[in-house]
Structure formats: structure tokens, C-alpha cells
Picture 1 (cartoon, rainbow, N blue to C red):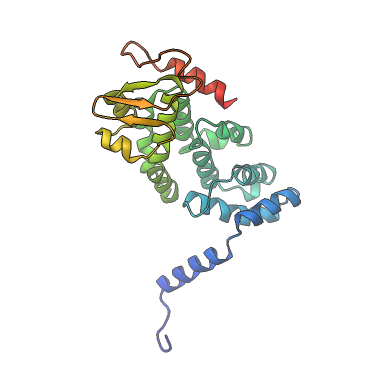
Picture 2 (picture 1 turned 180 degrees about the horizontal axis):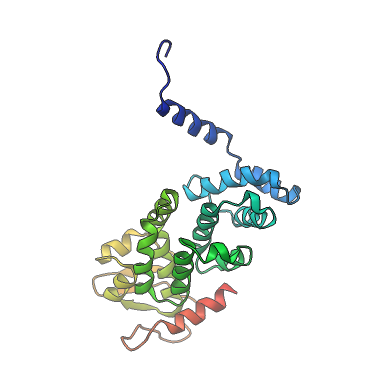
Length: 243
């Protein structure tokens, strides 16, 4: 308004709106990836697009994440460690896909050996090994990361991780005790399991059992979760599927 001096808040709002309005679209990024050689000039656009993915403003695009990390590798003076950590978390959340493994080859040890990358790598390893209880304990530290963007991503992605775990269970079992499912998802009740609305995997669920949709793998023989069965078989199967 005329006569009203702009405040720092006004500048922050204006800057945010400018970035949103000028953020490259997914189609523009894909076109750039297809046409442009590995040039440091594309780093700013890829960084903006990465942040949009972290904030959930656009869908995850693996090629754009890998290209940015590759450019950081080729042009170290442009590298931003916080963006590499965010890229790693985004990739790890694609479990059971091996996106994080592909990124690891591009990241120097000087970064992977520091936080929060250490914790992200540990979470990924625990998830792949189906050590779900240990995974959730480790994941807690990401939810309170000093990097606000990374912390918010970790908190917002909990349902996505839970759905991935349900998918992992469904690969090996036709049904499992509800208590076991709640424990591995770190939820309190069957209502919380149903609230995930993962109908592609869950056929039905009640206070006693969770029944999974039949698949080629879980219907090869009657596979019902037993207390004496650990998650080793799931881990092996997930590794094969991810190849």
C-alpha cells in the first residue's frame, strides 16, 4: 500500500512468491535434462526443483536429483552439502527402489561420512534389512534435524515409509497378526493401518489379522506370519525385486 514501508516479512513473502512463479516445471526440467550437456549453468534451476520436491510441491524426479548431484561432483565449487543430504533422503524414501545406491557413487566420502548423511544411510540399510524397529528409532533423529527442510520432509514422509513397509510384508505374507503389523509400522491400532488407505496391498484388516492382497509371491504357498519367522526372507525378496 502507498505510504507503508515494506518490512523484512514483505520481502520474504515477495521472494517466496517470485521463486514459486519462476520455478521450472517438470516438463521444462525434463527437456533441459534431455537437451543440455553437463553445464554448471543448470545448477540453480535443478536446486530450485530439488527444493520443490523436498517441500512436496512437485513429484519426485530421480533423473533431476541425480543430475544435480552429478554436477556437484563435476563442479565442486557449486556443491551444497545440505542439498546432497536432502537428495539422499528423497532417494531413500523410494524404497524398495535402489535410488540411494545410485546416488552414493556420486557423493564424496567427505559428505557421506558426516551428518545427516550418516543417519540417512543407516536408515536405508535398516529398511532394506527389514529391521523396522531399529529403523524407526534411527529415523527419529532425522525428524529433528538442524536442517528444517530435511526435518519437515522426514516428518511428512512417515505415511509413505509405512506404505512401503506394508508392501514389503505383502511380498512374503498373505496375512499377519495386526499387533505385528502395528509394531513394524509404529502405530497404535488397526484404524491407523487402515487410515493409510493402501488398498493396493491390504485386502482387509481387523483387530486380529491384516490380510494382504494376493500376489504371485505370497500365494506360491500358504504364507502366514509366525512368531518364529523373522524378516530375513522379506529382505531377500525385496533385494531381488529391486534389481
